[in-house]
Length: 238
Image 1 (cartoon, helix red, strand yellow):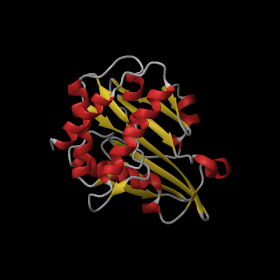
Image 2: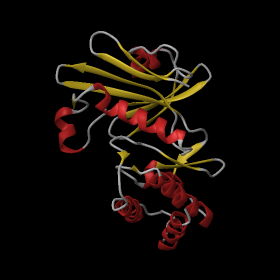
Image 3: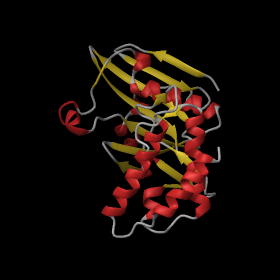
């Protein structure tokens, strides 16, 4: 695999894995293009819409970067341009590639694209879909996880921290499990490598807060404080 950067005219910049994407184009990062091709197999809504694509023999996830909160109501999908390599899609692509090199279960990056106009840019990221997987929030609204599952969650977080990766939003919706009960971590927007260890406890606390929040919001949410202890046991085992 080689990671290739390509800069085209009219402010378009691409970063891509040449084993998975042979020739990037603006169209490949467009929702409308895949809709016209009848290759969209599903979608997930968050700050924006993430679409799932079946392309040749590959299954991709295309995410358009959008802002949240009050800023998002004004700027929507616009970001201040500080350089191509400092754009959110490029940073997330490179971080995912680095984590894959370390053997972490995170999405495989396929391609990143930004379109710059003056001092602002808009961006997109394509990753490989994690096969036969669900986020833990969805699973916990239907059934409890086992002690071994929670232990594996803790191990996955510990391996991420061992690589000094800070996750900006380590909540229960950003943890996936596949049909072999392997744990995957997703959504590395605004994440980066960080020195030291003081911040790692805050990452764990963010996950605990999200579990407590979902427990209070959902009439059925199969999680207890004992489960959290199993998660910590897995985390401390590494």
